[in-house]
Length: 174
Image 1 (spheres, one colour):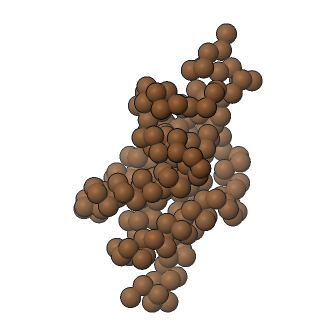
Image 2 (image 1 turned 180 degrees about the vertical axis):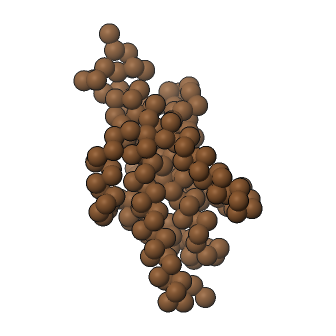
């Protein structure tokens, strides 16, 4: 018989609660330490948390360690989001925001280190993540596992970085 913690394939889990999220590390990570519970727009709240964590800690690391942290966070996210998605009966629940967090760290790492550039990067990343132009939509709808949850946001980050690179080349960021 299905329980709230383990729904059957046909029964969706009830909306997650703070207690449920903080009951296990994979849930806590997937839900961005609770930021994915904030409504409306949990992805935006997760991206704001990413920016805060970036400013407080990650940006202070040497580039090699940032790269390693991104790769490790991506791999950890694939595992955690897959596990939590299966547990919830929804492979990519809207409250799972670790994908936005890791992808936005990538954007911030390669964006000019000014508030204006980072604010624009935030807006551009959220736009690509929400609109999901091809092939983002393809990955989002066809890869229903932890990798798929994480990957479509990495592609949104790539779109964001391409646009930011064009703006840097056009000397918008002086």
